[in-house]
Image (tube, rainbow, N blue to C red):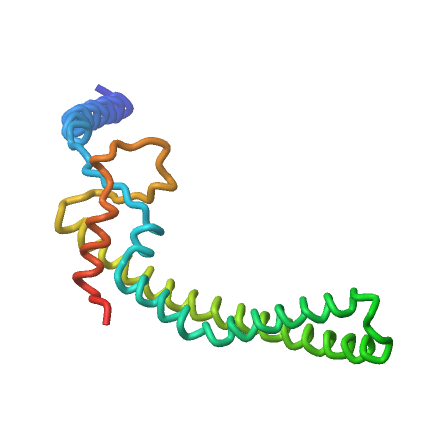
Length: 179
């Protein structure tokens, strides 16, 4: 047998071994079943006791500024009503116009500041909660033997028995009790 014949025989033997090895492994991999869970991540996060408390705290913290803004808007409505009245003397109308401009500027400033502050605080709270929820879901997956937990927004269809949202909320509340 020539050298090239030996090389061809060795290559054929190697390919046969490779095919045999793959044939033995494929059924084992194919028969392994994945354990999958589905979570509504956003709902799970927002339903935690910590997030509900944080939401209530935000509302109470910013309520005075919200009330102030509502009063300014009511005052602006009253000024508009007086300006629309043909009985209003021109001198008073000029004063009302100036007062309306000042209150409108103040309302705009309060509204923009309020929105920015609420959004900043809300984002900080949600970011902290999301990090914690991710940790809780990973731990839950390990404990329950899940291979993957996917968000409901990425699932076209799933059986309701696969949903673990409430379990995640309960695990979060246990790991991070509301203060």
